[in-house]
Amino acid sequence: MVQGAAADAARVRAPVGLGLDSARVRARMVERLRSLGITDGRILAAFAAVERHLFVDSALANQAYEDTSLPIGFGQTISKPSIVGQMLQALLLDRPQDRPHGRWPASSATPAAPAPVLRRVLEIGTGCGYQAALLARLAEHVVSVERVGALAEKARANLAEGMVRNVQVMHGDGRLGAPALAPFDAIVSAAGGDELPAAWLEQLAVGGRLVAPGAELRPGVQELLVVERHPSGVTRRLAGEVYFVPLKSGAE
Ligand code: SAH
Image (cartoon, rainbow, N blue to C red):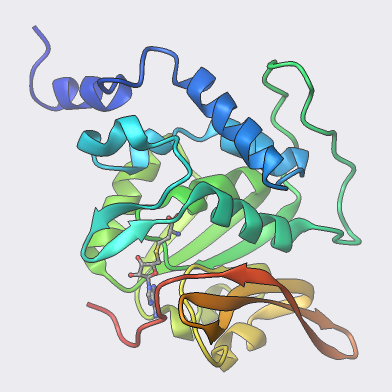
């Protein structure tokens, strides 16, 4: 009989209602994401590969592949896959230094994992670590900062269970970025509002891109900001509408 931690792991890996083949459920989620405008093959391949059910409570695992946010404790949520896709696409779209990439095939075959397109990425707001795991497939190294210590711990455990080795989770106030590990060629925040912290812009490499929620346009809708650092300065544009939790100060 399987006992203790092994039994827990077995439950997480084959949650009730998810069936034995979570890859097939994920492929359906990928098709839905594509129909919602997430068309970048590298991003879709990452969504097809990362087991989102490992990042939610086992009681919620049967909802893991629905396009919905779910509670992860501490008043926080795992972001909706389509919103994560929108953020990742804003981060990667039309980057001049991109390596060529294939499109997601029309058949249900799982494409080969593409080579990472980014070198160093900074994520603000790790939560349970799901977006960090996706970023880990698109980048050589991911640094992710979470202000709630217990969530940072949970994310580390989830990422370890998902065999993700190139994410460094840090507990602290993400408004300060990670100065000792800068510069980053991509910065993405899962929390925001109003002004962008100056530290993020300082830690963005020349040629790098920052994607973050900005000011609230109307109740429940924030602008999605894309900021790029060029040799001659910084450009800013809006790339859609999102809604994220506020960027809080300090750590707990
Ligand atoms: N990336 C997560 C989304 C988590 S929700 C996912 O993949 O689903 C946003 C997270 O931002 C929360 O966990 C919240 O605690 C965190 N957060 C808010 N303000 C922060 C700050 N100043 N520094 C770091 N994390 C912060």
